[in-house]
Image (cartoon, rainbow, N blue to C red):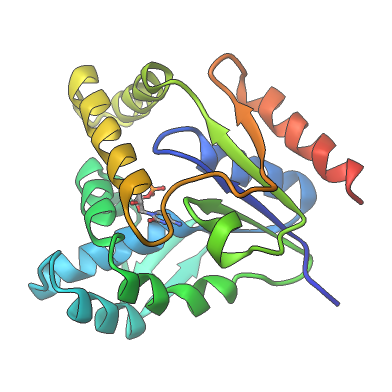
Length: 218
Ligand code: C5P
């Protein structure tokens, strides 16, 4: 029996995580936030003194990560690092190290392991192109850079984290450029992905689109 998978790929702050979580909740499926794995490796590397340029060191570190998940919390060697992973710095570090093919390979099987019954909603950059090429539904989510910077800004401010709109927009455009330009698993829609621009859509409307597409395919 093959386990159903929905992939949601797209650029930084396009709302992938929220959309994936809501769709999974509606369907009773598991989730995989693949960006979080790159963030964890970045954090663990910083702590271990492994440089962002050390491809082999990062890959070795990724294969011996002591990760556990407790609901939506992420535990690294027993420590709850969820809040640290959400910081902008962790995202920037993740984007720098994610260019390395050996690291991406080291995280491949870990990601495939999230595919469990009754189903999975996976979000990231290469879920539909590399990790789950057989997924039953692939969504490529976009929004204008202005809409994305604004969202990220509101998210941070609402959590009491100081932020500057201009800096956020510059950061996310730099990150987009790096994610699209890298040689291995660049950010791009799978050939069979459905494009969804949510610049003018609220979360419920986006969730409903995905649920409708999924129902049509059953
Ligand atoms: O999605 P999130 O912002 O948490 O991802 C952080 C970084 O991890 C991205 O900028 C991207 O470089 C990298 N990433 C990736 N492949 C994925 C998910 C994230 O390269 N599947």
